[in-house]
Every structure is written in C-alpha cells, then in structure tokens.
Length: 230
Image (tube, rainbow, N blue to C red; front, top):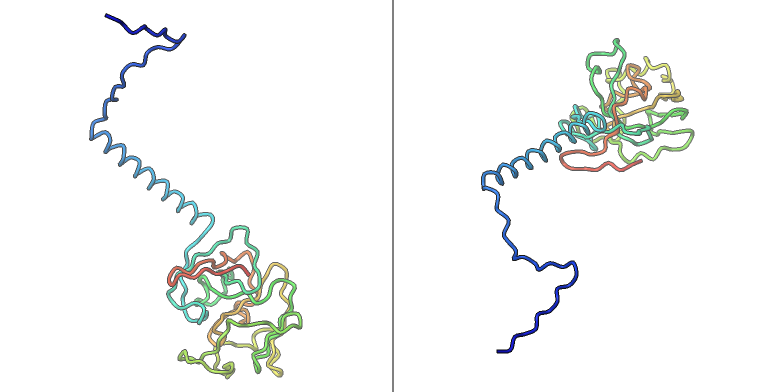
C-alpha cells in the first residue's frame, strides 16, 4: 500500500489544536454587568450635568413682561458667564446688591445691554430715539405697549408712569431727554418692552455693575431658541 509522504514540520510551528469554545458566563453575571454599566453611565451623566450647572451654566425663569416680545413671562433660560464680557444687544441676567433696592427689584432681572462702559447714551423720550456715541442705535427688538399689553406707537410719559425720571440725575425734565456716559465696569440695560420695564432708566437700577451679571442668555428652553453671539 502506498503512503503519502509526511511533510516536515516547519521550524517553530506547532500544529494548531482544535478550537475550543470559551465557557460562557452565567446569565446572572452578564445581567449584573450590564446593569452596572448602565448605572455607571447614568452616574457619569449626572456628574457632568451637575458640573455644567455648577460652574458653566445656570437655569433661570423669566418673571414679568419687560422683555416682550423677545421673552415672555414663565419662559426658562440657560445662561452662562464662562469667559463672558458684556456686549451690546446681549440679553443678560443680573441681580442688584444694594440693600436699599425696592423689594420688587431684589431678585434676578433679565434685560438687554444697550451700551457698555465708556459709551454715551442719549434717549429722547418724546421721539423714542436712542443715540450711542452720537450714532442712532439700531433697535429692532423694542416694542411699546400700554398697561394692557396692547401695542401703541409712543412712550407712556405721564405723571403716574412707573418711572420717576426726575429722580434720575441724568434726566432733563424740560427736554424729556436722558443723557449719560456709562462708567467703567458697568453697562446700561433696558427691557425690550420699553413702556413696562424697570431698567437703567430708573434711578433705582441705573448702571449695572458687570460683577452683578450672572450670565448671558444662550438658550431659551421652550420654545427652543438659540441666542446668537452679538
């Protein structure tokens, strides 16, 4: 009987043993491992969210109608002060630190930055014109409403109006004009709903110290709106 010749084994190469199936882990161990992975992922997610809201972002709620029609009462905002320097047209959230502030102002306020430090602002309450350093301010966000929220075409400027303009040292009663230069480290803010907003036109608020600004509005939660950079 003819036999096939045996091939010499290659140096250093051993014949491959038959593959054997690795033993499977019990079902309970696999389930426990999966649950642990899910819990670990959830814990890390919670940690990241806490970190973000502790150091980089905050959640705040709009209270009142002073920022209509940009923001409405009850809407929620995400704000951030990370590497933030206030710029014109930013929507900012701030608080007042003066203990003599009226009770209705001892809370966080949401307004729009109109002028920053070193800029001179001039507001003519008869015409509604705003000049910044002598240049007409492009003001696409503002609206004028009456006390019932109905649009009107002029400022409310009667004796019983919410502002006591005569208490503001920068207000000229005879000309019905407010003129002021924003000091260093401060901003001049106004609400978009100009007739019903207590802001830098009011002597109780006046210029806002940038150290009192909690952050710039970056996102409105519902309806979702991303506020672009200035």
